[in-house]
Amino acid sequence: AQSVTQLGSHVSVSEGALVLLRCNYSSSVPPYLFWYVQYPNQGLQLLLKYTSAATLVKGINGFEAEFKKSETSFHLTKPSAHMSDAAEYFCAVRGSTLGRLYFGRGTQLTVWP
Amino acid sequence: DAGVIQSPRHEVTEMGQEVTLRCKPISGHDYLFWYRQTMMRGLELLIYFNNNVPIDDSGMPEDRFSAKMPNASFSTLKIQPSEPRDSAVYFCASSQTSGRTHEQFFGPGTRLTVL
Image 1 (cartoon, helix red, strand yellow):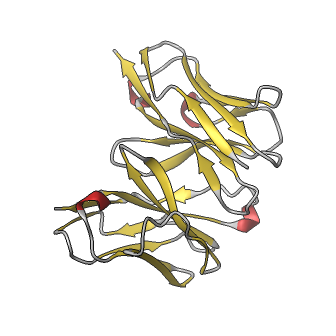
Image 2 (cartoon, rainbow over the protein chains, first blue to last red):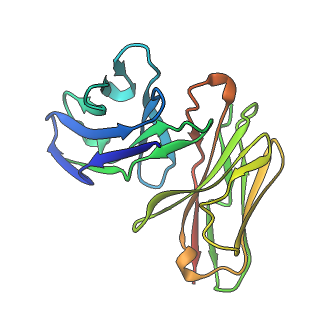
């Protein structure tokens, strides 16, 4: 079975501070993992994806995530937060059933000036 | 490419009325997904299609909800009759098998308000 757990439904950081959003997954098959971002009143858009190549994946807007098989984790980080990063972030894992992704509950990121 | 297109963007209706949401997936994509997003329940998968065939509709809340995909470029999600608890943002997404990673591309959503 596949599932995703995002620790912390809300994360607040100051502008310029490190952003760390946590994601742990469960998968019965080699996982493909994704981070999506949702800005207010918009659909989800892909930030980055892990597809069994490099374990450190770089995405758009300065975000990156590291796949750690031993910890079943795929945490999202950004060295320095910007006000424009305020959004909701979703972690997802590809299921064993072709096509389907399993999404976490999301983490709302607030960035304080 | 224009991306996934959804219409309408906003819909306000009264309880008991029929509501039809529409989606045009990205050309060449063979999977189509319908999601519902609410504050209480988060992002829920309602149903998905592969090559126009429904694969899993276990997320459809009840018989008032139905979805069709008559061809590769069009899908509808219908609610009849609508109820206030159906108020949510409904997203359509598509993906393609040939990409193998199955990343999904989301539309902008339809915000449904049932009074």
